[in-house]
Amino acid sequence: MQIPRRPRNTANPVRFLRNTLRSSPALRNRDLRVLMSASFFDAIGFMGEQVVLSWLILDLTDNPFMVGVSLALRMVPLFFLGIPAGTIADMVDRRLLIRLLNMVMALLLVGIGALIYLDMLQVWHLLAFAVVGGCMSAMHQAARQSFAFDVAGRENLVTGLAYVGLGMRLGGLAGSIAAGYLIDGPGAHMAYWMLAGGYIVSTLLLSFIRSPGQAAARSRQPMMQNLREFAGELRRNNPLLTLVVIVAATEMLGFSSGAALPSLARDVLDVGAEGLGWLNGFRSGGAVVAILLLSLFGEVGRKGLLLLLNIVLFGAALILLGQSSALSAFLSGGGIAGELILGQSPAFVIALLATGIIGGAMALSDIFSQSMMQNIVPNEQRGRAMGAWIVGIGTAPVGNLQVGAVIGAAGVGLALSANGIALALVGVAIFALYGRMRRM
View 1 (cartoon, rainbow, N blue to C red):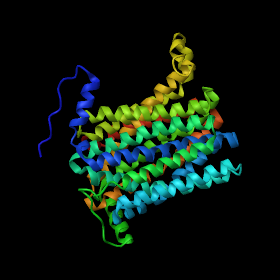
View 2: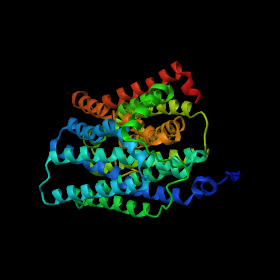
View 3: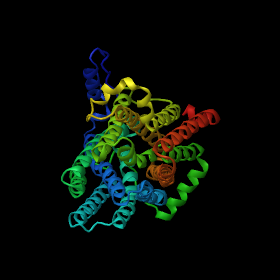
View 4: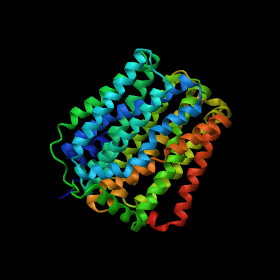
């Protein structure tokens, strides 16, 4: 199949981007466009729920460590259920599995909202919900990311994952900001009910996808045999195991920064729940920008090298976020810029910039690692490969607890800066010591 030529006129960046997206072979796939739209509404629920959960825990306990505990409980099931979830995703129709999981999440969110409305909510309710939601998330992520491969096909994998990620990040942007406004306005119960609506709309959209996907392959073997097969694949496949380690390190040191945002918003920047929503929104917005830039290049090569460079950038952005208040004091002439957004200080503007870069690094890390892991395993094991990726991100509780503990002992700035330095060193070390990764 001949791939359409892309327009060469870049004088108008907006027109160039629009024409590039229109000419993308991946976006000419109807089912991929529907999956991208469904992912938008999924992410409204997923990202918005993290904003509400972390804010309510901080409000009820006044303890940053408990925010880390709640987010850790949200991620623990991913570590233990990742590969079983991927095995199930290899055995069933992924479309039906995603729709079922969406409806379960919608019911959970409606229930938590009802507890808040009836003034019956307690901390243990939120912690229990975090665990159950984490179980649903393990299944959902394994099914969605392998289904994106099914729909896009191997030849459009990077752009297919990028566009699904674009839908998710745009949804995360909308969900985060909307949740922040609803917490400060009508109340957290309305925020939860709005997020439940996102999952319901996503389920309805997924019903319009008629095909299981051009690359779908369903395993007919018993579950235990599938698990044993993939365990053997992990032992033999050194690049796959290295990627799991990279994902785990990035999750523990980088993605765990989300546990610091409530304390940063309330105690350092003094911007409240609305400001927390904007910080999470800029994180999603940065991801959108990064994905759009990546889409201009199509199916890029040397993904391993790009992944390692992205890790170093991720670490630098964490340092910038941790030192946003100190940097704003140093740049005393930046006060005017601070008044341009919500009438807040220069520190808030710097923090928004840093979270935008962090969001972009998060998105690129996911896209490169997911595409590489699915490309280096047999087609019938792709769900399990995404299960291994979920095991990697399931190490997040270690990072969330560590961030919460360091914030309680030494403050937000030190917690973020130390993790940023450590993450950058991980990227440099793998670049120097494992040449095969930078050549992939």
